[in-house]
Amino acid sequence: MNRGDRTEELVGRARAILFSGDNKMDGTALWRAYVWIEYAILDLKLRHGLEGETPPKKLARKAVADIAAIRSMMVALDTSADKKKLLYDLRACRDVLKAAVAGYERRSTTS
Image 1 (cartoon, rainbow, N blue to C red):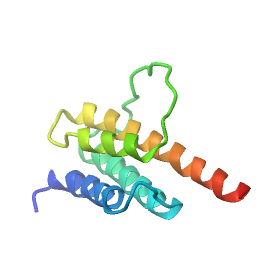
Image 2 (image 1 turned 120 degrees about the vertical axis):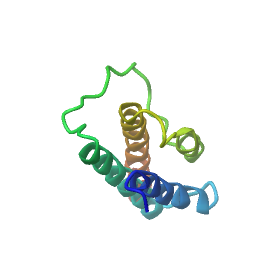
Image 3 (image 1 turned 180 degrees about the vertical axis):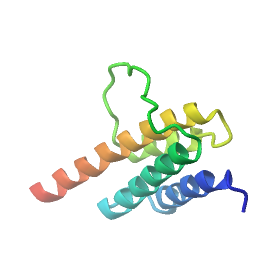
C-alpha cells in the first residue's frame, strides 16, 4: 500500500460505517465513525507536518447533526486534494460527527 493511501483508507472506514445502515444511526456507529475521522486527522497531520496548522476562521454556522448532512460531507471529501484543505474538511466532518454523537447521547438519556 502506498503511504499516501493511509488517510484514504481511514476515511473509507468512516464512510463504510456511515453508509452501511439506514438513516437512523445509533450512537455506537456514530462514535466509531468519529474515531476513524479523528484518526485520519492525526495521520494526516503527522505524515505531512501539519501539527501546528490552525484552522481558518470559521463562519458562524449551526452544526447540523443529521445523518444526511454527515453523509453529504463525507461524499464531498477529496483525499487527493491539497493536504491543508483536506485537514480542514476532515475537521469540519469531525465537528459535525461530534455534535451528532452528543445529540444522540442527550436523546438516549432523556428517554
